[in-house]
Image (tube, rainbow, N blue to C red; front, side, top):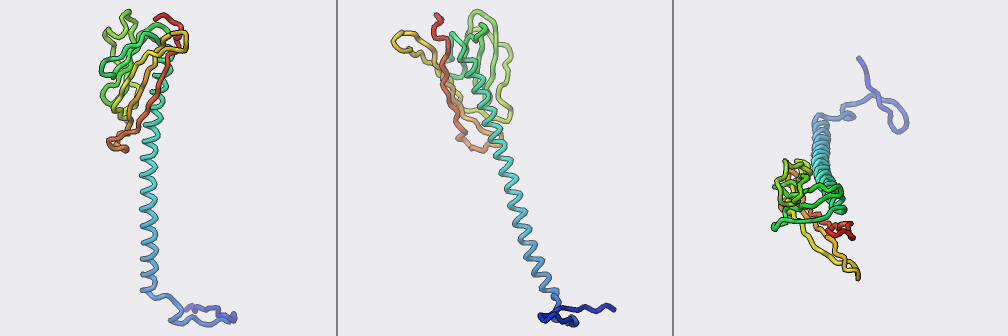
Length: 193
């Protein structure tokens, strides 16, 4: 049989007695405290993972909507002959290569169509190209169009406003949405059309 020994303060070894070990009750209490700490730590970790997923979705929605807005603004800067619908949901214009382009807020998305007809804004457009990701929810989209006069020369140029609210597929922003707004000035200052 094996015997257990202990080292006391003086460094002398002696046999381990019955009061020198842990009781079953002490072990159960220690394990219960350990399990409580582990459960709390796991709960916090799971919450962090969920929050990370939400943050990733919101960032992806913002990135996608910002990219779409920049694409529209880039094409509008070199456009001419702008017309918008009465409700402000669509904007048609000729791009820098002369093709008629239509941007439209359609449901919860932004779409683009292109034709090469002479009557820009009045023709039938082919099936549209979806610009926003399916996980991005677009609300309250609006195009505005204003003619501004530049300096003392009396040259009019178009100023296009784009505004819309975005939300994630899971509705992180509730009904409010994240508002994105920009104003674009066409660069064709000296054109007659």
